[in-house]
Structure formats: structure tokens, C-alpha cells
Image 1 (cartoon, rainbow, N blue to C red):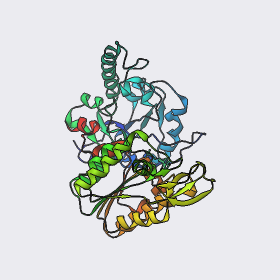
Image 2 (image 1 turned 135 degrees about the vertical axis):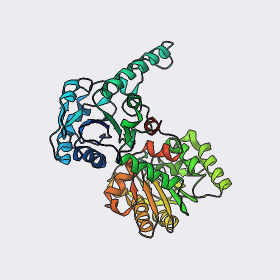
Image 3 (image 1 turned 45 degrees about the vertical axis):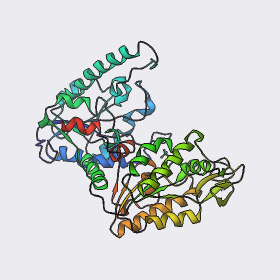
Image 4 (image 1 turned 120 degrees about the vertical axis):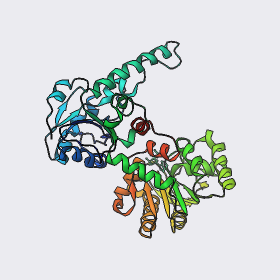
Length: 415
Ligand code: AMP
């Protein structure tokens, strides 16, 4: 079923959204992108005379109740954005009465699903090495089904609009779909848009295709980097991973972030790029600091000749120009991961240069897809959100989709 064809009048829809929004120490939302992302789906159900049971996770409470990760903190924001009151149920397994009494136009928000270990389906309090682990896992899988079935019992139909967790086979993202027939389960509007954006980058590629991968580590992105080397024309590698490449060639990197056990991986990436005819673009100079702090002293030096006691926190001016030149003229662009420690205002120049070049290329006709929490935060920080083609709400899910993996959250709806 598709959300466009479903008749919501008089129906109760249980919707998995990604309301895992960042909160400050007072529980105030610092970035509501994810809530705004889910609104079209939620409003569609209400506008057509349906009722909503909204469910999400927040953070990693590891199967235990943790008030710091309670969704009660965002209830008012959701109500305000939906323009209607929201009833909060402080235990997602105890919403039977409220769900039964739900009338068209009414909304229930369930407490954080991950307060129950069944949501993720991982046994708690037992190590993988324990001989009893396999038994515990089996038992947990069985109770995960019961958990999902109970959630399903609240509603007539199921909508998955949580792209951020679509790569997880959790109770609310995948298992629950087994308890609805094909006519009563569907992807939400956000999820449909995400799938289309990935499709644009995977099957509808206009060349040149330039990918920019940044962030702190090579290790967490090696899968996607290797995969992209089979697709892109140019790959810019920036941010903290730069220094693993510099070190791999015997460079001096001072105190810069490095993965010493991944030097061979870096060399392997270079070799694969050469083999595939992909232009690999690495930084040449860095803004280095004498401490990991916004107020540290700084200087610019070659990325492979960083003095002892200094660390590379941002791309230098030559590198920024090099990145901008590499992005210029691109027709398909994927950006994941900042080009420096952009959280510090004094080290945003590299990420800003990347963001500006992407916005420019987009204005000249490129399709640009920005994904992963940090690059999205960058784009928002620089006020360029409306100058790129698509901002994905998914980090890991986006990368797995682009790697070509089937996402369980999508497969469960389509099977
Ligand atoms: P990731 O989670 O791997 O995408 O990494 C994102 C993080 O990488 C951000 O918090 C950045 O501050 C960090 N980062 C980017 N460049 C550097 C750098 N040169 N040194 C240390 N951290 C960095």
C-alpha cells in the first residue's frame, strides 16, 4: 500500500517516526529537523480523518527507563507543530485503553520504545561470549515478537516514516510489519522522499559524481568509501580521517586524530581509487591548534608536517580551494561528515567551503544529497539548507542504502 492511496478516515494509524532529536541539559530541543520531517505524514493522517499513535526511540537507554531520554520532553513541541493536543502514554506497552478510545483527529505519543529491550531485540546483561547467550537471544527474539504484536494491536494500519532507523531490524521498524497485511502497511511521505533521493544518487547518476566524506574516522566509513569508489568520479576525503592518510605515508601529524591500525586501510583506499580511475582528493594544509578547544592558538601548516604538540582541526586555505574546485561542475553530489571540528566556531572554514561549493553547484543544476547528523548540522549552521537538493534525516541508514544494502525497515513494508 502507499500512503497516497490509503483511506485514513476512521482509521487508527500507528506511525514509527524518528523523534530522536538533540536536547540540551534542560531538556530543550536544539534541532527540531526530525520532528518537522515527520509532519507531512502525521498531518495527512489527521487531515483525512484518521487518528495517530506516534512511536519513536530517543537516545540509547539500553532497555531501561531513563527520564533523560523520555519523549515526554518533546510532547509539547509535537502538539504545537501538529496544532492539536497530544496525549502522552508513559509506558508504550500500556496504551491499550487510550488507543481503544482514540477518536478521529486525536493523537497519542508513546514513551520511548527503547525503555524496553524488546525494541532492539538484544538480550541484556549477558555477554556474547557467554555459553547461554544463544538461548537468551532466542528468548529475546520471541518476546520481541510479542512486543511488536502488542504495538500493532493499537492500530488498523502501520506507517514507517523513520528513515533514521530503517537500517535496524527492530520491533517498531520491521517486526511490527508482520502483524499487518500488505493493504494496511506503508512507507510514510518522508521515507518515500528519502528512498527517492537515494535512488537519484544510485541509479539516476548524472556525472560528474563527487562524494565528500568527512568526520573523525576512516574505520566507521570504510564500507561506504569502498562502495563509492565503484560509483563516483571524484572522492574528497576530509576531516579527521585526513591524518590517517598522512600518517600512512610517513607524515608528521602531531597530536591529530589518527587510527594507527588503519594505515593499511588508507593505502588500500588509495590503491582502489587508482584502479577504478577515481580522483581521490585529500587535504594538503591544515589549520592546526595547540589544544582541542575553540580558543586554542592556531597556525596553518602542511597536513603532513604538523609540529609536535599541535593537532589538525580544520582544512587550511589551499585545501579549501582544492575542495571547492573539485566540487565545481559536479552534477551529482553526496556529502557525509564535516571537514573539520565545525562545532568550534573557529574551525568551521573547511566545512563552510564544502557547503558553499555544494550550494553553488546545486544552483548550477547539480543534485546534492546531504546526509548524516553532522553534515546536516553544518548545512543548518551555515544557513544553506534551502540551497541543496535534499537533506537526509538518516545517517547510518543513508550510508547503508547508498552501499546498496536492503534496509530492513523498507523491506518489511514491501514484502
Ligand atoms: P563522524 O561521526 O565520524 O561523522 O565524525 C563527526 C565528527 O568529526 C564531528 O564531531 C567533528 O568535530 C569531527 N572532526 C572533524 N574533523 C576533525 C578533526 N580534524 N579532528 C578531530 N575531529 C574532527
